[in-house]
Length: 127
Image (cartoon, rainbow, N blue to C red; front, side):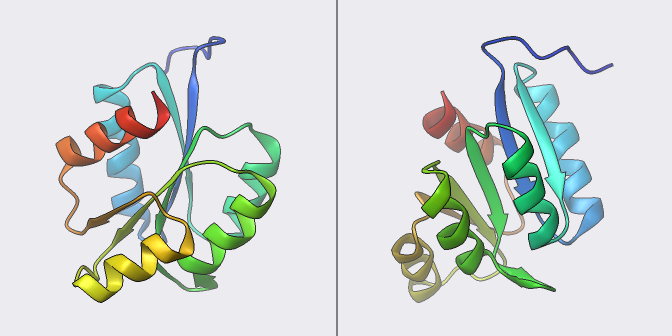
């Protein structure tokens, strides 16, 4: 059972087109950080809609998406909402990581995602 949001609740958008992975991340992170509310999106359009409906505290974005890239999303969304973001990608060489940081991500985590590393990153960026 999900806890009701409180004034201290942090809203975290998770954008990943892999629905099972996004669902697993939401479930695991909710168990690790029950004071946060994790909102999944599968497309850029869904992410933009959620970002306009909720005051987000953090974005976790996949890079390769069917209707765009996380690099484009971070530029579009953070130009309107200056919120920290974590890139989560299957691409993890030095150039990929630098491209993410240059686009505006604060951190880059390579898939497969280590939930402990992601949880620590969320704690650091969203409080």
